[in-house]
Length: 259
Image 1 (cartoon, rainbow, N blue to C red):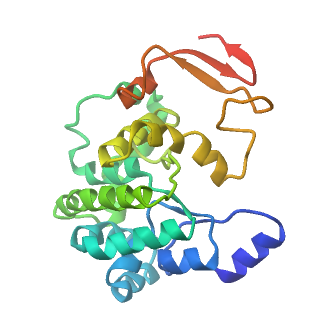
Image 2 (image 1 turned 180 degrees about the vertical axis):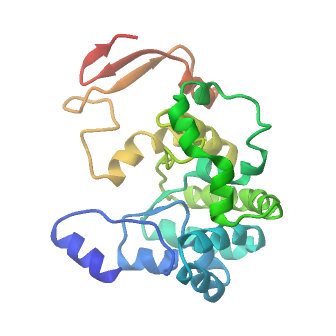
């Protein structure tokens, strides 16, 4: 990881890290720009030896151990890691919508129909194949309650990180199963608010915090000289973050897009 970061710095490139064999605090100290999916956090706050051993066996085995480990983590240890990462100025891409989706896969067939999913072509939905995904992951029925039990700890971690000055970006891991490109960003902002962020911080996560993470100062802000990509809403998202879905008009590159 240190070699990758060193090579990236020579080319002035940011490094986004999906961690497994490195804890989040170590990765931040080495100089990663962002950490995806909260990876490396349980490894920094919990039993790193067991988790590293699981990751060494393969991606799916490692991810399962990582996701299941959250429910047993201590809030004091999580808080310490959150404060450390915030102080290191590393960005987090929590993708809470991904964790939430995984935690509900055993209920996917009984969940209420989503308007977002209705817009997905049948061919894409067939490719998702939830049952095959569960089989491939080796997930048992007992795993999903454990995944769900870890969700409040993930929310606590993100809330503590932002409360200590950390910045997050609203990534979604679309188009993973049940995650609709574009629409999942709205769900991610809703989950960030549910986790304890203000609606304003949730909006920042999808605009200029994300742009800062990518070192793109022409994006994510409304000011002279930036790219004129924007939406006009019919209701205030600071009152209810779900109002980001109430889009009346879209401007792309300074031109209105016909609806």
